[in-house]
Length: 242
Ligand code: TIU
Image 1 (cartoon, rainbow, N blue to C red):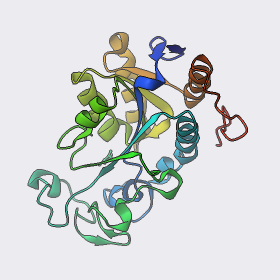
Image 2 (cartoon, protein in one colour):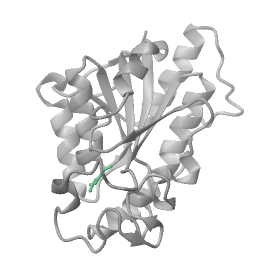
Image 3 (cartoon, rainbow, N blue to C red):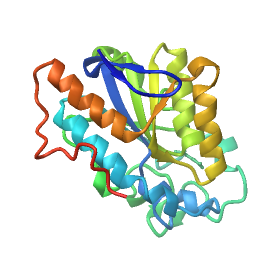
C-alpha cells in the first residue's frame, strides 16, 4: 500500500486492486461540432486537460495497471436513449442528428470516438454507456470484480455530470474513488469547484481528490515496493505539460 497524498486525507493506493477510469474523453464532448457544443458550451477548457490525462495514462500503462475507458452514446436506432434524455432542453443538435462529426452521440460515429491522444490500447476495457453513470446499463461492475478491483482513480469529463455520477454509483457498490483534480473539467468552472468540495466534504463522503503529480509519484512508489521499476526514461513522471 502507498499513501497517496490527497484531500481530505491520504488515499491508501494499491495499484494491483485499482483501476484508472477515464470518463467520456470523446470528440463529442471535447471538440467543436459535437454534443457538448450543441448544448451551448465552450468546449476549449475540456481540451486543456488532455495532456494531463495522457501523462497519467502513460505512466499507469507502464506500471501495468488496469485501464478502463468509458464512452457515452446510443445505438443507431436510439432504442437505449430514453425520451426524457432525447427531448431535454433546446440543443442546436439533438442526439442522433447529423452534425459535423457524424450523428451526435451515436455509437460508431466519428464524434463518439475517444480523442486520439487518449485512444484505448489493445487489452484495455472500453465501456459503452447509455447514461451518465458508468455502471448503469453496462458490464462495468462484473468486469471490475473479475479483475479484483476495489479502488478507482478517475479522470475525464464532465466533472459534475458523468464523472461525479460514476463516483456516486461506485460508492454504492463499495469502491473507494479518487478524482484527479487537474485531469477533469466542466463547462462551468464553478460546478467543478463545487464538485471537488462536495466529494471531499464530510470526511470524503464521495471520495478523495488529488493532483496528477501525486498520482504519478504514487505509481513510482508502488513500482518500487513491488520491485517492478517504472522506466523513467519512457514515463513522463511529474512532467505534466500545460
Ligand atoms: N460525459 C458527460 O458528462 N456527459 C454530459 O452530457 N455532460 C455535460 O456536462 N453535458
